[in-house]
Length: 300
Image 1 (spheres, rainbow, N blue to C red):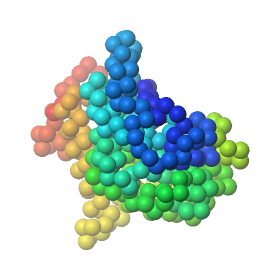
Image 2: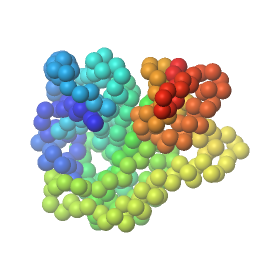
Image 3: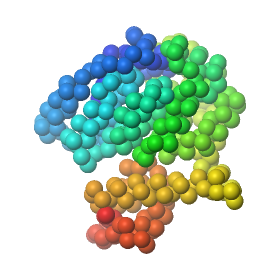
Image 4: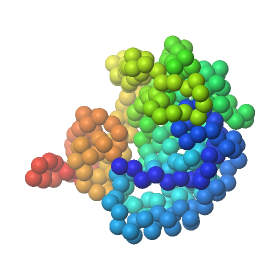
């Protein structure tokens, strides 16, 4: 259950995507400013908490446009964490502002980032995402990779497919290579489920979704199965990701005890990956295991 925060208050975005469910972009811009000030959002959030509502599983920063356009993003993340110290903060983004170091710095405080990358084919990108003229596809790609290099949280990459636009073999091939390079925590391949902003935006068939999901979901498996004695290729990559997951688990259980299943859900990774990381942490004494009536809880 997610509690969503709107950081724009209007349809203000860097893209004007064919499929956008909130409608046509009213202001296509790259100008960053406090569209909805942090104080206003945090005061409203504090009042919501004080009203005694059931607590959500996650607080998600998004809204009617691109939330990273709001220059108060970092303050909003920090204030949300102060109000809800035990609830992860997620941010939805179209990735267009990740080339900006200030945006990457603010975003790095989130627990989960859900960036989009629908296509790596330039002609598809222009037709599908209808970006502001100042935003090039290659700079977005580079910005996402730069963000991954500095970020220790979970990245859930989203790919949205439209029939006859970005469901091409060329795009799938490029996305496979990019996913191996980015190494996201998870890849979600989706299609339209509600009316989009423009006519002609239609969902892809199930078999297309299945093909993309299988190919992009198998990128990690293919990496894990191949070896590289140089220490710089796939084997080294898998080892580094395992270390990152173990560090994230250790930090999480230091805040509060959790089960394997709870950690897997919170971090967005398969439970068997969590189990392997916990085994290593138990051997080094970094975590402890406490039996409960029904399950084991792990703590720092």
